[in-house]
Image 1 (cartoon, rainbow, N blue to C red):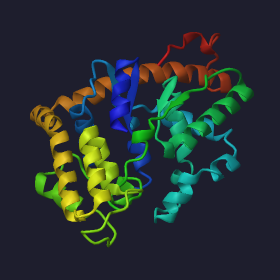
Image 2: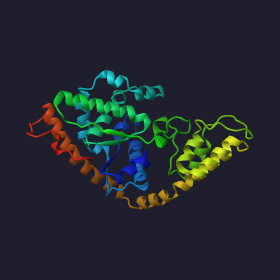
Image 3: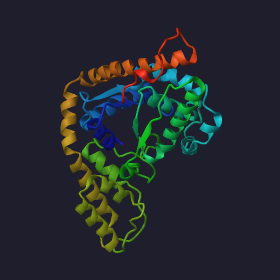
Image 4: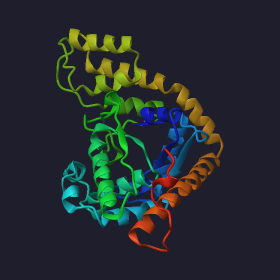
Length: 314
């Protein structure tokens, strides 16, 4: 997610937010949530997000997001949410079936529409939620007049879903993550713990659906990746050695980012400053959008012009 998203800051005005409101559906510790937010902010900056070229903020620092989510929810058909596979997938994995988890796509729609978004980078697993966003925007426009344009998706197939330790989508909610900035020993332990089958060392190993290969492809050169594919297909190399090769690939790939991360951590006020400045910029855009929305639905004083004239491409 981070790599294609960060690349978009070279192509236009990009908005990035840390979804702490969404995280409340699965994280119920204030200490953990604050730590996760800060860690993610540092990681994004270390991996190349440039706050001088992008708007980077914490979701909860833009109150208009939740206001818009409520307004959108009043016209969102229940059947639309009932068809969303994410709720079923997450409850099947043990997450509580809360209203917040069920209405997650509406809050996601608010995240997208509040910034007047034109293009939204999503993984394959989130494509349905963007389609829901478009459906909700169409419903709002049909009900109240032209308020929103319909955002388009940008999907990168090769990095759409990063597998976790168990082969499922890597997610903190699923407790199957490999932290890219984990200490060396902890990172090695996580990688060596990747689940594999019982194929003997001397035998060829299946490449289809291999977590080791899927992860290695993200960090290795094409030549190194093909060499590992050969090791799988030829036999004679055990999973332990293949995992060691994966560890080296990940450790070396993120080496320059670790250096940048240490620089960021030396400035104790940098993250707070970046998020505060990003939130101020995001609120400027969200307030402009909400002026249109409030006027259209009848909340507050009427504004003579509320449609698309004040939009700027984002």
